Image 1 (cartoon, rainbow, N blue to C red):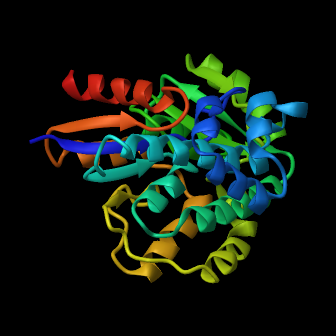
Image 2 (cartoon, helix red, strand yellow; image 1 turned 180 degrees about the vertical axis):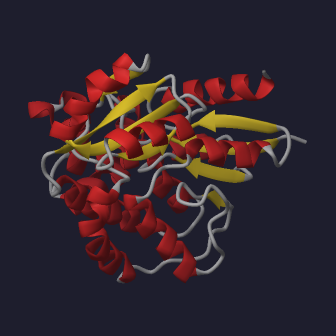
Length: 285
């Protein structure tokens, strides 16, 4: 029997118009979200006024809502999967779906997370194509020690984080090494040491929330293994994720090691589906 795994996407999957059909299907949830956030998140998704949809304090609540509604629609004709896995922001959808907190609590958490992450100015991220983790790590340690590896997405696709000026300085060097360098349209150096200053504030905010144990197993970005069964451990993983690399490759490999898996991406776009194909093709070869 196949192991069913649902994947929730994170930042980078957003696009203008996402959720259009879902907003009409779940008006009460949209109204609740608008009340919590203090603005019309559905209008933001549909119109992307002032390009706010790509600003992390708006991106995170928007994706959390669309991911959530997509899963609610899925549940109308399907049962819960065997495992949940979410990329960065998507991990909070995974935790919500697993019963750790309700929709409104999760929305408040990701809104706060987005505000805190936006507060770190002058930083950004870039995708690096064609390098494995160890090779890229050596390049950074020897030449750009103030840049961090933020995402390990596939065997040959990483993301680095750091101050914008240092990223610009690294671009030519990395390309001269024969690697691809793609600046990302994000609002900060996520999953790096540059998020550490807001970590304690994020922890204190979540500590006021009522967390529960996972009803369905969730694989952690922080550890690439299962979330702990106790709420203290769950809180620790949620907080540590903010300034630690997303171990997506290792997380997928962990699930694949459990047996024959059926994956389904639940949210806008197919970013994770495409990443999964690259990971599996490398495993097969």
